View 1: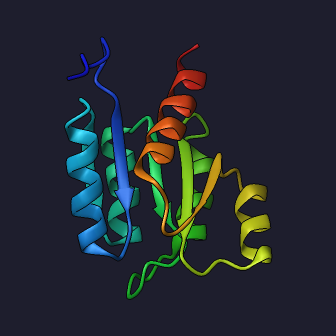
View 2: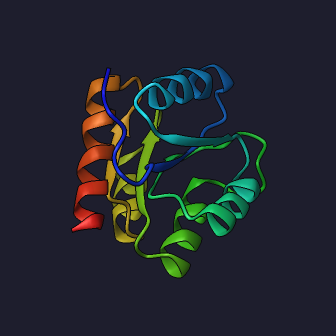
Length: 131
């Protein structure tokens, strides 16, 4: 059982796969994180504005959402450059990956990813933001 950090780390998970969101929320909450989840790009931007998470795990394709992953990334990095954004996708092509990094993505994960790798990346970007 890990001791939560002094300041509880805030994490937003944005994906159109509800089962994945449930798994990730449970995984990170058990490790002391404050977690928000949404399937909507619009709601994601509202959560970022209200709660200013330390990191956002953001799926490239958000299904029926009017605002897709790259647009959410663009808005976050334009207004809150200190928030780490970790992109993920099950179907990204090289051009989308390049565009994500050009827009300021901190990491990019191909689905399926290992939870341990994701946890390390979230801890890493949070560590860089705090120092």
